[in-house]
Length: 504
Image 1: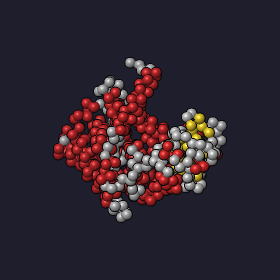
Image 2: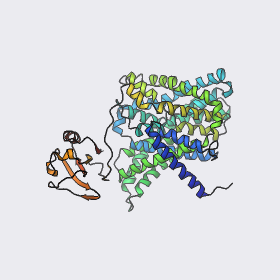
Image 3: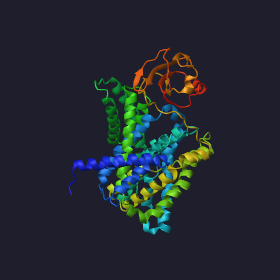
Image 4: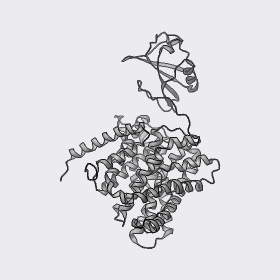
């Protein structure tokens, strides 16, 4: 049956809408929204409402584009000053850690298939291929869960986890592609050439990501476009171009686009705040599209034969492979405590990336590829359910969770400053308790270097003077360069809740 473009758009928009509603509801109960997007795809798939989607090439293309956007946005949002203290352990986990995880998990899968579940029918090379696809932590899941839950962690753990998840996909990708080639060729692999190829891809990807990121900043700042709304689009196209050109220059595009995002995000460029907000929204849309597509691709009835071995492998990775990897890789870093290592080992989230990598064997017609895909899907579900829902709880148990900020984002005043202006901007609601200190703005005990710049009263906005009489229910926009003094003043005059944004 020929499907019209209008029908595709109708179904696609409906699935997006349902996913966002389900995600909003699930967030209240601590369920990772990314898992819910995945389940929505499964519900509407071939075994659910009958929406058949079997085009592996389209799924692979969607996965590649979405992952590129997610990694680029993750790099843009990562502050270099935050990851600088953890670059060394992060890089070790992202390279050596992925390799160790693949080896340990691959050997276990081979033993499991040979001695316990012979029905899996996996030889050693196929087991190593499966292990390679799930050897990296998933950037979409880590970024999405840590940031959506607003989880504040001590000891630079959050930047370390985000750095690892954002930069470890290239190693897993190269291992996956290498084993696909070995399985399909049937020849004895030249391990020296494999190692050389991996090193070349990492080096070329790193160098191109850095220098193309620098070049992109210069181009964005020198282009003078009359339509300012084109700058966010230019930023998006820049990320996609960097990924693509790196691929054709024999580097790793995923690594390049993440590093380029780091370079660009930590530089000054025109219309930065607007462009960054656009990329955040586009990255979330990419995550929804990615998980929906992967959910549509799987048939739940095919998961039943591999359900038990998939769960066993997932639990082995959570409780054995990941902890061993983390403790071995972090031995040289004595400043990282045992509790920190324990939490890092727990945040070994699997998500969209392993499923994307599991599509590669399907596209290459590797024997047993469908079994590999289904097992990887089960591992992902278990990881998101078991680890994704418990990140705040485990952080609290280990004493690593900091008290989250009670500040809300600005609601009534859509104001932006240049990045160079270091300020704390707050939006407070005037109450009867506040007015006890005086009704005129001049009588409000604001600290030095602080300015009340605008009042919203009902639907009217106006600039106040010192003699402006404030009323219960007014919204006041306050800007200061002394953040701590401003917070202390609010506490003293009885303002317990206010919207807040730090411009740094």
